Amino acid sequence: MKKVAVFTGNRAEFGLQLPLLKELDKSVNIDLTLLIGASHIDENFGLTIREVEDYGFYSNYLIDFKHDSDNLDSNSITISKGISLVTDALSKIKPDLFIVYADRYEGFAALIASTQMGIVTAHFEGGDITEGGTFDDSVRHAMTKLAHLHFTTNEDATKRILQLGEPKKNIFTVGLPSIDLIKAGEFSDESELVDRYKLQNINNIIVFTQHPIPIEKDNISNEFESIESAFKSLKIANLKIICTYPNSDIGGKEIINILKRWEKAYDFIDVYESLGRRDFHGLLNLNNSSSVIRACYVGNSSAGVKETPALKCPSIIIGDRQKGRLHSTNVIFVDNNEEHISKKISMVFDDDEFINTCKEAINPYGDGTMGKQSLEIIENINLNKKLLKKSFNDINFTN
Image (cartoon, rainbow, N blue to C red; front, side):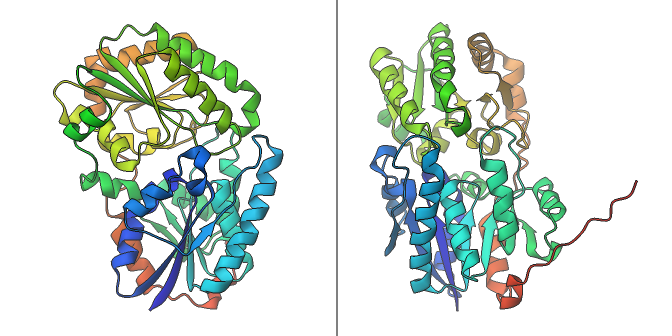
């Protein structure tokens, strides 16, 4: 039996990890241990450990590291705390394989700890690019070079990891895990959502999440003034805007304060700490399930690019945070400009041609079998110490 440890540090990450965690948990060949930490156990960002536990996952290893202040100096201090705490946990668990997801500071800390302890580490969702001004690209590629096994969401990402010099035999294109849950219809239905979010007499909804870009923290106020003005100018009948808290990156607390002000000022805006994955996907699926409610995603979360195509949901991405992402025809990128934002939102709800385009959107992030594919690889791969001796595969460039 293989002893596998998985780190989860924030709500978006857990929603993506869930299909794999389910497969690992039910496998008779895997002894699974979960490390839960960072913003999952931060009250300022919704205490999302409750969602983890709602799915039946618990842990004896709560990794309590978070930003003590909302400025860039806190980033490296927080990461250093995370490295130390994850190291302590892993020294007790002694896993054969450690799994870390994506590109955020929480996972970066966990992966630094494991790889420097000589633990075979698998990195999921490497090779993507965003080019959006966050630290994500540099952190993601650094995690790739530290990790030993690579599970990607698309062929373009696989090619980039090859370009980074990683051996082809250690790279596996398995798709985006959340597509498994969408394909299986594992999200809240319309009747639940109408009651929970007071959607009686509502015909149009916007699900809004705008995360901070830490190096552009000084621009948050201006950014949200433009978005607020765009929302106020909308002439869409029976509209509700459902806002969620941002992630815990630097600048997140400032955004939360703005959202709280919006909720008090506008009766068409409701704010929630976290929707949870089931409700988030369920709301975006209303275009398919409801005859009276039309839904759209607005903001800058990667979910607006990677998950909305599988739900055939229109998505408007504000600013540059996701501009390099592989995306489908349902996604529109707009500048952080009041007129541009309001014009595109109005089009999403009024333009039948674009609505039909969304219905035909092709999802580029896998076929919904990521969990099963990944489990089979993990169960069968030889996790010997040879994986720790990384080689660099040079590309033969020609003129």
